[in-house]
Structure formats: C-alpha cells, structure tokens
Length: 173
Image (tube, rainbow, N blue to C red):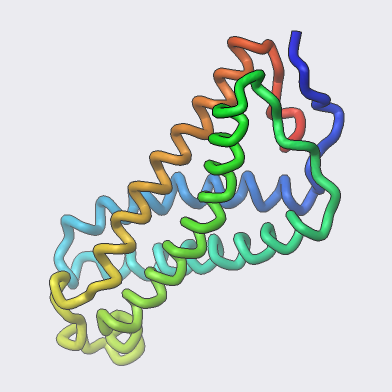
C-alpha cells in the first residue's frame, strides 16, 4: 500500500545517535522541568547530571550531523501531499537547529548564570537569579519547542503506520 522504499536504511552511526539522543531528550526534559521548581541548593546535584547528559546530546548532535552528510541515506518519505512532505523535511531540519540551540543556550546558562564557577568552588552565592540569566529563558522555550517537534515526529510515524501501512521505523533501526 505504501509508496516509499523502506529497504534503504540510515547508517548505523545515524541510527545509534538517533535513538540515544531520543532517550536522553526524554530524560532531560522532565528533569529540567523538575529542576525549575527547586531552589539552588536542592538542584545542584541534579544540575550536574543535566549538564553531563546535555553535553552528551550536543556531542551526539555533532556526530549525527557529520554522519548525516557523510553517509548515504534513504530518500525523504513521500506522503502524497507536497505540504506534508515539506513539513516532514522541515521538522527533521528543525531538530538539528533546536538541538544545537538548546545545547548552546545550556552552555550559556552554565557560564552566564555562574553555575560552572559555583560547581568548581562550591560557592553557591555566585549563581545569579533566574531573571538575570537571559539564556535560561531561551533554553526553556527551546526545550518546549523541541518537545512539540518530538510529538509531531512521533505522530508522523503513527500516521504512516495507520494511513499508508508503512513501517517507517525500519529505516532507523
């Protein structure tokens, strides 16, 4: 019933970075939302975990970007609708943009907010208030946009299953 050639797969490096990044995002987002409600003293241990996992996402995004362009990849999926086809490409491209943006804003927050220095010295008084860290708001908004795209991506996979009877996950496993 489907019209796409699903025998062509992404490279093993792309597949590995796709799934590992997805898992890390599903850990980082609720962890970040939980930390928003905590005071500075309570969040420092969790913040270290958040930073390490966030840096992993950044490194994986760099690797995935490199492998995406270096290795042959399947053609973009066709849905029968030019608008849907363009939307799918736009969503995939926005993932890269948002992953870089959230990583850079996270690094900015770490530096501009005084968190890095506080972790090195143990002096929590160096940490600025939330209102004084411009990159933190951008980081939060980017996280929400990333989760919206994540949901649209999952809905797209489900749509292919339901309407075209195509198991598009075959290409990325």
